[in-house]
Image (cartoon, rainbow, N blue to C red; front, side, top):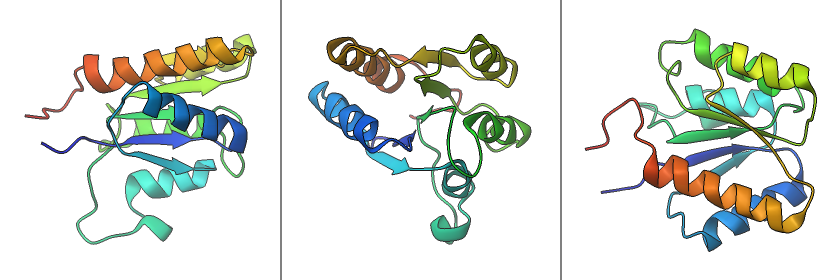
Length: 147
């Protein structure tokens, strides 16, 4: 059985590197694809632009989505995902350094499955990301069958 991928949408190179390291250390075996802005995220998920391929491809098991991104914000990406039948049930975790109540509220209003603030402390950040990876890739059962 092949494992489904994780899509990480992160524009901060340091956060990206840390998230990737922590997920590997937590033994999350899923492939992790990274895009760095909101438009790339949509292109990846809808198999358009640089990610166009015949027959499309599988959706990731979860999208880890930052709120503040270049080109399109994470909230705009989330709105488009929820508006499309192909991605409306795709698990999306907002993983952000934002501590704005407005961002949290809008994330849930637009259909986020979870809102997780990136802790400032390195050890807390690592623990949070490891738990996210294990939960969404090993514990959670997605809306579609993976059998």
